Image 1 (cartoon, rainbow, N blue to C red):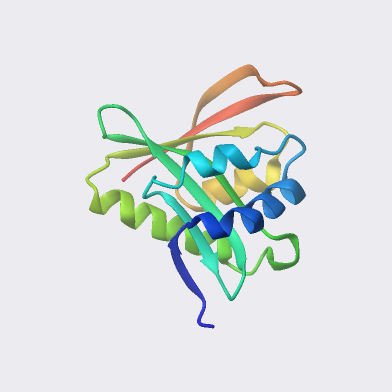
Image 2 (image 1 turned 30 degrees about the horizontal axis):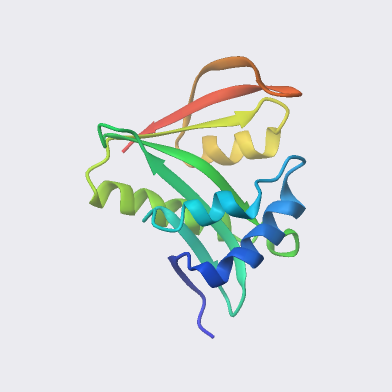
Length: 143
């Protein structure tokens, strides 16, 4: 099968949940992913099996997008999959007329923070105690 980025389908949820469970200490349950299926910003990287996903939601005014989650299967990290998903999603957001994308990242998650900085995000602030065991670094990028 050709490697591709596409919208997530209900049949992708088991693979997405597996990636989530292997990526985060407090993973989302499957019903949260199912609730995002109608979201055009729920994309997967498909190589015969889902190897990564990204979920971006929108604000009520449709100008600001919110990166809710991004993850790649452990054995496929550092191969550009997250970058491709992020680039695709940013292009999609621009197409839809969004002006900015924002996110929260764990203060202790240095690799993720560097990834976002490499994608042109800047640090907007910090929210203490955002996570049960960590602060959140607030980041954003104008589109």
